[in-house]
Each structure stands twice: as structure tokens, then as C-alpha cells.
Length: 255
Ligand code: NDP
Image 1 (spheres, protein in one colour):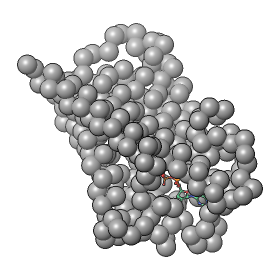
Image 2 (cartoon, protein in one colour):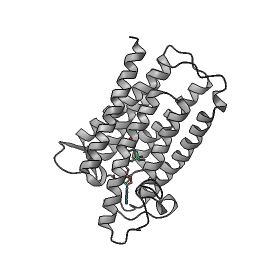
Image 3 (cartoon, protein in one colour):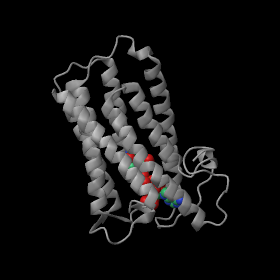
């Protein structure tokens, strides 16, 4: 049995765990206790902004470390994947937390550590694969339909995610802790376009990189964000009697 065999076995098990957690979270309607669902019973708390930085930064550092210290020669394609990852995680760990208006909010340390673990596994498997394992992409990969479609989906996801996060953050003007109904753009169709954008980003990445760790990361992203979008949608409908009835949770006209 080769190392690659065990690496792949681990990734299939990791994806299986995502599916189990997805079923568990959706069937029991459990909401991860951060943001609007922060509650007692999950141990000590940490400030929200610090939690986001600490939770997300391992993804940036570990991916870069494995990619850059790996034994493989990198070509333009793998450098492109590097840029995609670093771009996303520079925002998520160093820019996004300072855009939020959550100074008065806290996150349970246990949730932060779970998020850290999730990032640790995904960044390690993706960085390790591209740094140490990855077979060379075919010469024409830049023109391959999987690459092109992946890039388009990724870019559309980035725009949607950034725009929607910005719109949500902008709803809270006074450093309070209140929530309001978001309107405009993709909010006309879904309650959580930021989650739709994030899922598109990693779906696009999986398509353009066409490898198992990228697929596993996409599966985990859906497993995290789809149940949370359903929770947010139900929460909005319960909290605001005038919430737009035609809006879906996360996939326009469908879910
Ligand atoms: P939310 O949509 O719950 O919140 C985003 C920000 O907007 C928070 O600061 C939140 O404040 C605020 N906010 C949300 N809705 C409202 C509203 N109606 N009125 C006022 N303020 C509002 O997103 P998450 O915090 O769950 O996620 C943040 C980002 O991280 C997203 O882009 C998401 O895609 C990404 N993410 C990715 C994951 C992955 O698996 N790849 C997993 C989790 C998140 P507050 O915190 O006080 O609720």
C-alpha cells in the first residue's frame, strides 16, 4: 500500500464524516453556536474578532507551508491554485474579521477550536497534495473545460460572498447586536447569498484543481453551510413576520 493510498483513504473517511455531520445537523436542526446562535453550554468564550483570526489563520499558514516546502516543481497552474487559496484566506483571516461589527459579541472557545481543526485538516491535505503528491496537470489544462468552468464559478462565488458579507455587515450600523432583514441583489432570491458564494468558490476550486482534497473541502463546506443556511432562513422567518415569502434559503428557486 502506498502513502497515496492511505492519503486517499483518509480523505474518503473525512468526507464520510462530513456527510454524517450534515445528516445529524439537518435532521436535529442543530445550529452551530456562534453569531446569532451563540449560547451558554459550550464552555468559555473568546472575543468574536480574535476567534475568527485564530480560527482561520492556520489555513493560510499551513497551506502556504506545505505548498512552498513541498518537493514538487510548481508550474503556472499550481501557482494559480496557490493564489486562489491565499487570496481567499487572506480575506477570511485578516480582512473579514476587521470588517465585521461584532465587537460586543463572543464565540465559545470550543467552536473556535472545531473551526480551527476543520481548517487544519483542509489546508494540510490541500497544501500537502499540491506540494508533495500532485501529478503534473496536462499541458492544455489552462483550456480544459473543467479548469475554465471552475475559474468562472469561483470568481462568481467570490463576488457574491464578498458582496453579501458586506451587505450583512452594513446592516448593523451602530455597533449594536441587532439584526435586520437584508434586501437587494441576490438577497431577492435567497437568505444566505454569502454561503451560496462560499460554496461556489470551493465547488469551483474543486473543479479547476480536479483532485480529491479539493473535493473533500467542497463537501465539508456544503456540510457546514447548507444546514446553517436552513437555520438562518427559518430564524429570519420566525423573527420577522414581514420576511419576504418568496425567498429561498440558499439556492434560488430550489432550497
Ligand atoms: P453570517 O451570515 O451568519 O454573518 C456574517 C456577518 O454579518 C456577521 O458579522 C453577522 O453578525 C452579520 N449579520 C448576518 N446577518 C445579519 C443581519 N440580518 N443583520 C445584521 N447583521 C447580520 O455568516 P457566518 O458568520 O456564519 O460566516 C461568515 C463568513 O465565513 C461567510 O462568508 C461564510 O461563507 C464563511 N464561512 C465559511 C465556512 C466554510 O465551511 N468554508 C464555514 C463558516 C463560515 P453576527 O456574527 O453577530 O451574527
